[in-house]
Image 1: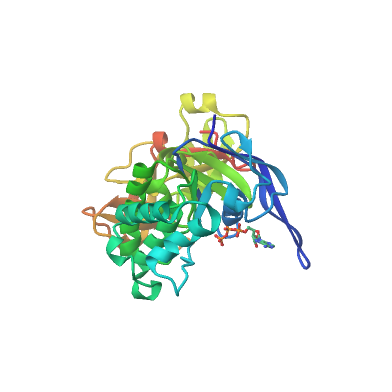
Image 2 (image 1 turned 60 degrees about the horizontal axis):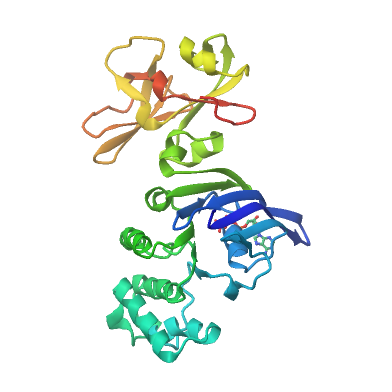
Length: 366
Ligand code: ATP
């Protein structure tokens, strides 16, 4: 049995000016016990609303949310067995770390003072903030405040952690540190976690699975590597990966893809697996675009280097098929491989690396 299940969950807001806003549209996800699922997607796609419905902070318009097989749609937040951590740490400024962490337990449980104290001590030990226990929030750094916010969730011993961009207010270095800590914490506590983030690196590195939303609709829910290597549709392919996958619209004529600037010959093996559709989009990740010395076959093309962005271990190269052409594409190549602006090069799109999508439906077909 799945631990946390969303079944056809929809949320419609009614706005006086805009009318109905479908924030979450028929989303179904099964989350296993102890699983860490990141919810990602562009701004306004329904990430926070999804989380808030699980937390009980937002009513569900239709569908069901269940925990351990029990429908929790109508349970108040405090009785759901979930603990939420927000981007704004929402700590009480007049209370010490200890008081901040104990407060929720004092209000919503009948645990004894001793039991509460034990839980707070255990959580501060886990988070390495025991020495800060008598400080007030304004005497803590951002990272320490975030740990207290996490501690407040941990002491509740929830079945599910719900985290809404908990690291968004931290600087890049601290965010990376906290990312690792959160992973350790999740391994140690083994609590099912649903984690909303804008940050792809966070999603790729921390998740067991990533749920990608767009326009309120679930696009794919799969492991980070599956989302990366086998994106289910054009949206996921373009959203996951930095720099983004390159896309070229093409018309299929038999075994040939005819794009604006090139023709691409497909092997019989690929053609056999394709549906009848003629409008296809060819996708290739920047790291799969090769810059080669000699032009050999049907997958090699003349190109010109537009811009080079050195990144140390690798170079991001913006290319076009013809000088001055506005539609550029990107290749990521080894940092030692030097190319110059304006240089004529040969690029290769190896067939094993290309993705094909139905241009009309966006669905992946290879
Ligand atoms: P962001 O990444 O910017 O935080 P999000 O993916 O978390 O966005 P939500 O906050 O879930 O998106 O919002 C989804 C949609 O629902 C948006 O169009 C938003 O404007 C709308 N929405 C959210 N809350 C309300 C509300 N209380 N009333 C009306 N519309 C709302």
